[in-house]
Image (cartoon, rainbow, N blue to C red):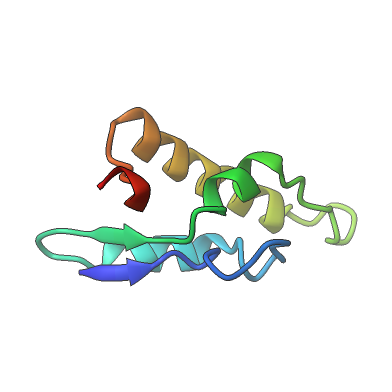
Length: 89
């Protein structure tokens, strides 16, 4: 399965862009193999972005949780050598 990372066209992510449900669906539907295609800014956007807490007091911080999970996935791909940049091909 080939998919486009949901942050590929987003420079300033919203809670919707960072939703954990989107990340889960994105990474769990393949049966044999998964290729995630993205624009070159996604890693930097995740590393530099600080989500704002817009939820009501005592409600879960969904944007923060989604940001952390997206960043963890991206970091794991890079650390594991599973990230290929077009300029290196």
